[in-house]
Length: 237
Image 1 (cartoon, rainbow, N blue to C red):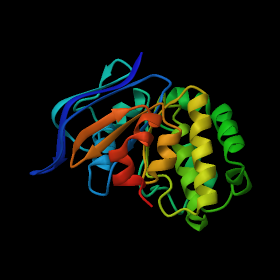
Image 2: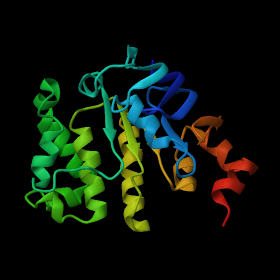
Image 3: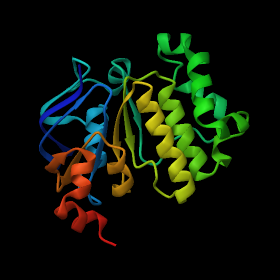
């Protein structure tokens, strides 16, 4: 089954158009990376898919269901989770409470919460160590693990992840990337927007380059890593 299909998508903020005729398709179980420079529209694309920004034109489908002009609350129920840029956790709630907030409003996720929580704490043991700690006191890497865990508590089949390495030290970036790869290997389709182009392309089944709101290149992660134009634009030392 196709996990995500975006056709001729146009979107933006009021009269400011950011995305122009974006087309992409990701199959279920794949790990897809979307790369591009600052201001290319990557975050806008994820926010439009998850219903946080209205679609101007075009269509979005996930897991066979139309997402276009659906509210974000319904899109979550369709099986699409979103880890936003900046994490956006609840700082005055504990780690455990933040995790449960990802399942509380979804009946099936709530029933499966103990099993899901066990998987998350095995994936990110540091969250288990800090279960009773206020989220606002965590480090940047711990916050990112918590944001991913909270989204997983909703048991999504498609997980959108926006800039998970932003502000993280290399060692913590590696922990987060290994976690995302494990999540994918367990069957969740992962769609990653990431500033670390080299690392995101290395683990991608397929990848897209977004420039000025348009998809300009697509291929496997290995193909884009070897593409001279991609190397010059994003991988030059």
